[in-house]
Image (cartoon, rainbow, N blue to C red; front, side, top):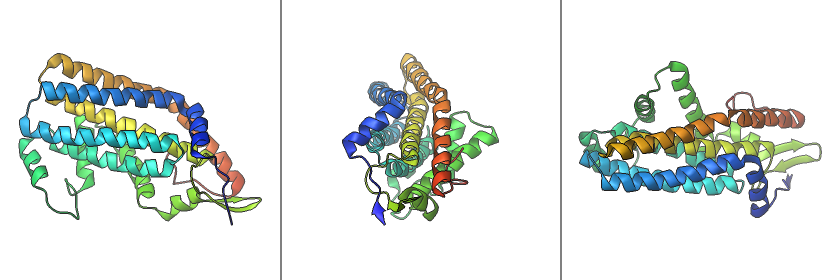
Length: 262
């Protein structure tokens, strides 16, 4: 078995930026939106306890968004996807606390090191979808399927690990080590950044309700929706990456059915 001849990190960064420059631009806008949201909420807060908890979680998401962006930009897509799964969990906690000072106090007093808050991740996902006004079952199922896929990366699920970590090529078995610039690696990096942006803008959209200044609240929500719409416009690009994965894995004998979401 030999190591897959991947590019070094600088070369991987160059190749990946060529592939998803529009996505990187949306990530930059999201980073700026975090700064704007934090400043507005600090100056015009309401729902005191809930706002404090929300700001703590928003700050965590902001940092995770940056780390996810750095990892995905240099070819560590699998690791970035795992971080995106954690971001969905943090977003769920933020939405579950919502505007409830009682839940904010519960969150602050939570001491169980074996479980997070809320204890059931699905409660957080459901709270997020409700706060975003997403009620149709198909869309709600898509969010949960995305989380399941990301947890495959987070917990080193064998199905995804075998697909990403080992390539069966005519020259023999190749172990993927370091930056992954294969078709699957490109998809994983892009998907991680896509999800990180989606969860970040959702968090700002939800947190904007805790800003007492109506103009700031509207501005934050409008920018969050604009960035989300930018992600929607990139869907054809994601479909092309999915097709590239299917072609590549068919040629090498690997299968993506049931692993990479459509």
